Image (tube, rainbow, N blue to C red; front, side, top):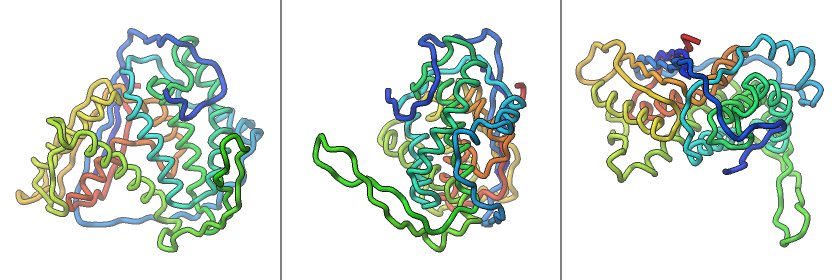
Length: 336
């Protein structure tokens, strides 16, 4: 499954960050085209990689904003003022929450530590990002604001990428206990042991699978009984390329309906050799001005273990349920 992303055209306080944001978005009149081109070869093959890096040391405010972090920030692509639709708040929360829940389910880090590191990264990153956009272009804390979502998704996935590389299999976690109303929250230490089958070299893949399945489940739950439902594919049925494309197109439409991008399309880039199924077929998905336009590129420059390629994750889940395995994928950005 090859994917490239191309350039950009550019209330729930679920996650907050330090800094100031304006109330009225300002968009540049200049048009950019952002596309995620997902082209994919589908075949019943599973390819696993390995990880040999050491676990990340504890993060501090000083480390999050040290010379190295500031130098990386200075070299990073600056966010652009581009025309993007307001996101559906429930959908924005779904993308953030599914990514967080996948970390929790994998048992790779104490979640109190994850929340601390997430806070420190977004605290260090917020003001430079807001200053690059300029005053009045972003509403802090509003996940439906694509400029803010772009930022907070970067901070979340920068944190996940930090924690997921060679984490400990056993650790202590502070978990809240039930208390009476009005009483201060209390915590208890719990020893957490990761599933031994979740070895370090499959964690990134497993995280993507969990996120993709969570998003796909919610889309089916919300739209399954409507005219906008994703075409039904029987599990493991390996339908032909036309049927697969029809389903991919509808997933793309639902992302657009949810405000994830300004425009989008899906097509077959290269036909497979079989007329009976879609094995060997390459698909291309393009998005214009997606909500992850800046963050996707900023994360890519860090060579992360996991990326916020939500569309690709969802389509992978769709194809897996259909009986296919994506053997290759990529996301590229052009015209930026």
